[in-house]
Amino acid sequence: MSLSESGPSEAAVAPIDEPMVSLVEIELGVAVLFADHAPDDLKLIPFEMLSAQTTQRLADKLAMASGLGNLAAQGIQNAMDVQGLVRLAPETLEALNTAQPMTSGGWNLGSLVTSDGKIAHSVRWAPATGAQSVGILAAIGPAAALLAIQVQLASISRRLDENIELTRDVLRALHEDQWATLLGLHETTMRAVREAEAAGAVNDHVFASIATKDADLRKQRHLFMSLVRGHIKALDTDSATRRAHIQKNIEQILADSHGMLMAEWSWYRAQVLRAGHISRDEASAVENERLLAEVVAETEREHTRAMTDVADLLAGLERQCRLIAELPGERSLPFTTKRRSIRDAVAMAAALAERVAELRNVAYTRPVPLDPPLAVFSEAVPEEVLRILRWAMRDEEPLLAIADVNIDRLVGENAYLGVTPERFFISAQNAVRKQGAIEREFPLSDVRYVRFRERDKRGPVLDIITMEENIRLTFDDWAGNGQGLEDASRLGNLLAAAMDLPESERRTDPLLSGGSLLPISS
Image (cartoon, rainbow, N blue to C red; front, side, top):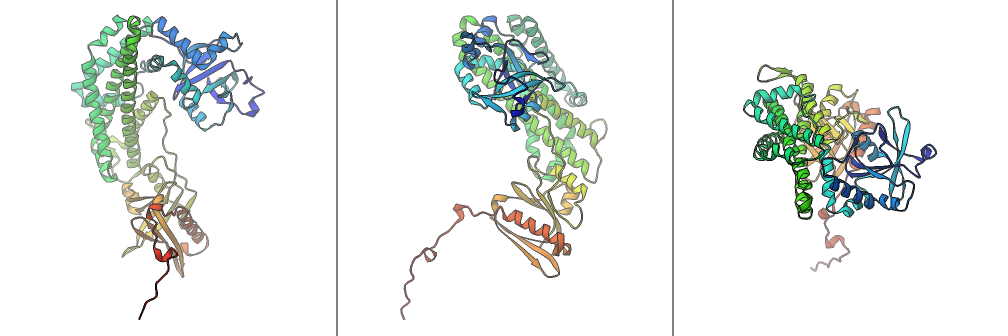
């Protein structure tokens, strides 16, 4: 079952003025469900692994802080009970980010729909960034840590080895000395989670199995974290160095990334189970509040940073592998046992990246094929150039325009000029086609002046004056008239639209400020 936004046309279909289901998103993608009963087909994560008293105290605070508890006290019909947590799918989050839902009393309104698109329940929800959710978290005070534990508990039973068996084999081969320890910690923490779920609590017997593993968990985590961050540093260079590092170390990057995932999630499970164990100490509940808040916050902070690091590494790795696959040259990469096709390397990197996205509860995406609205070429833009630039460019920026130009040096050099919403780039055509390299980039905010000039019997000239340099580009004869000239002129206008002289660079002089000149005496 998924969540959809209600527009005016849906108002008559679902009774959205009195919704029977309320969702309060307490962090991105995770919401508390209030309802008279849990809707069918909605995957619910019940409050668990906390003591009965702690769970009831948390539920009461949530109901009152949301205002729904007050409705219950007044006997109003749509009063609701806390049912548990709901993890919203990345697709739902994406829809909510772009939608403009109806609102009422500070709540967004929508519908829960079944897999065949039928409306099952009207719903109101408060997004994590809204005042409703912020107010609730502030109102429940120290109990917010208990709620955070529930969110963490909802994720720690996830496995890591599904869909990534190839990289697991690479990890085992390259880190044979660490494999037994990694696997042991993984299985120990997974078993503790299963036992806690079966018992409905993190009691002393459950926690005993991981209580002595803290040093080993941290050692493995630090080891693989340092390896991953070393790769991140090596890839934060120019395109040639970046590609060389991947071609030489592709297997090691995959192994270290998978190893970090196993070490990180083993450590994370142990920390969350520790927090659950602390929360059961009702006799010292007051003095444990600050300890619990610190453990929960630090765990989430460190885990988020680590998962962001490995996600960034894998995103860069997949992008570079796909770029190498589009370039002429070697079609395979070295592995320990034998060379593997670059397509195999792409599949392995993508499988790991997709798994990490799932673990982070974010949508797995890759850049869409480039389709620039403005192309200044004598004929169509070569398809291989767009395929290469798809992976060579920054993935968050669309390509608005691309042109076939010449760099006006002693000898004209064929180049590509590209424009995005944030920058423009100039790169020799051979560098793009053979190396996947974008040689020079300039922020549009650096553009100070643009001059476009037509020339008799030759292609036009485009001068771009930036904060640091003057760039002269020329076009071939085909851009001297007709559609070619029209497109080249529009490209000049596009860049000219970015021209700006910041206040810090403006100058004044008395001679141009109304000051008078004294006569020169003879």
